Image (cartoon, rainbow, N blue to C red; front, side, top):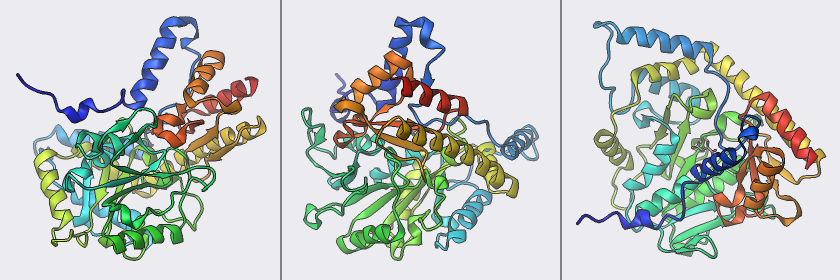
Length: 409
Ligand code: MLT
């Protein structure tokens, strides 16, 4: 008789956003009259249409696929040169960061890359994660059997090092104890879920720590496009020495509205070598070649269009739209007396639940009383208990309406 992968059986409950979706579905079934009026600021899913230049590129590429002379089959393993060259020029060279196209691996998005990247590291590698954290980093390591046992009472895995991000430390993790023997450090800035940011000196300290202690930083920069403060780093490769200790993951989902279109990339520098001198870039190339057949040609052309002058100004306008939502939510909640953070160089607003309510109790009360949906902070880790995340990715009407209703509570 076949046997299921026991690591999967260790996962407590469903994926966070699936749980939230089921709760909303159950509420709608019970209260069909209220279903249409629900304001959804839970999952960070964009709501603005793709930029006109992206749509034009998609149409053009679709037409190419209809003609034998321009038709494309499998994409090159690492992605098309036209896209990788545009990525390097705009996302790295323009910020003074050294990355070459051979180090850029185009994919179908940052979620899958951030889940899969752990595969190229030893099974007994110890991971360190922020708490709260984007659940994919931990869950993918649970599936790989790397996290030990789960303690239901604390919500912690025995073999994971947690780096609490609380209001006391400004939601910025402290460097882990060097004796903890950490191999992989997951960092995400601007942060999901807290909306916290990191400045260059602090990011440099992480890079120095990783180089000194033989660790690798998996740097999730999916939200870098939301940085407006010019002093903040967009890429970890803006730090000295990052090429020998960091992998960076990027997404077109939030920077250009590709959540449904699917496009992202990961940078694995050729300088990143393990203790035996193994090139992690070559391992990721091997994995990519074996397990992935490339993002669709038409989507890679759409990604290229994001870097055109029109694409840049159109996507900047989308980002400005979402950041105005963030401003509305942030200031509205402050006026209503909530303790809030994030939302300034990030599309997430992190609020402390009122009257000591647990994150899920606040979720239920918000849904029941005013039909507003957010994401319970505890779903991102134990230090998220008593917090709640709202996204700025809704429509303007949703942002205004959510604030109006929350003020009525
Ligand atoms: C979130 O809401 O945290 C994100 O939308 C999840 C994701 O990007 O996969």
